[in-house]
Image: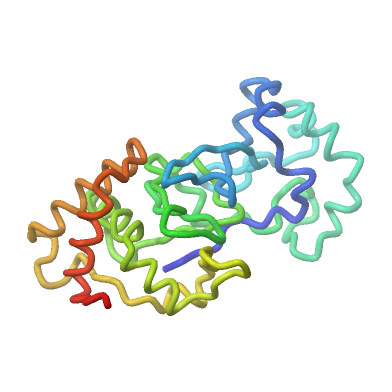
Length: 244
């Protein structure tokens, strides 16, 4: 399932640069997370450049009063308070008393867990693994398994999504952006792409699966594409794809 990231309702207030983040106290930093946006993934490596306000913990909103916001996040509070009227009148906000909350924080992001992520628009080099779930997806997507995954499954799919075969499938099922070479990863397109299911037909026990998982791990750890030709060979056999 391809899931869209958060919507802040005010990017200009809730997203800050790495330089701004460094100047915050350790406590105030805890209310920000590295964001997955269109600049966050380069050759499958996550490299957070921006931080997004995320005042949530595993159970929900973590800042429950304006006084707590002022005391714990003084720099952010001073930035937010001058726009309080705008923030509390957002149509999408569910509790106007929590006017510092995001418009859509996505319940599934509250739990920190391994996620296969992508940018909003991109190529086969625009996928990566957030192994610890430390990132918040903003202008991007999470590719969520419908059944329980092993770690090797995440590596397997990272390799698959990095292949030339998957690029061919993106060109068939998704919208190509003007100028060519970049694709729209919106769920209405990408949820339709047929991909191998690791829970079926003993795929996990196959040599193809094992090798692709190892190659996906190499991509995740160091962005290595030295074996891209081998990845393409292995993935094409999964689809029984004979390229012309």
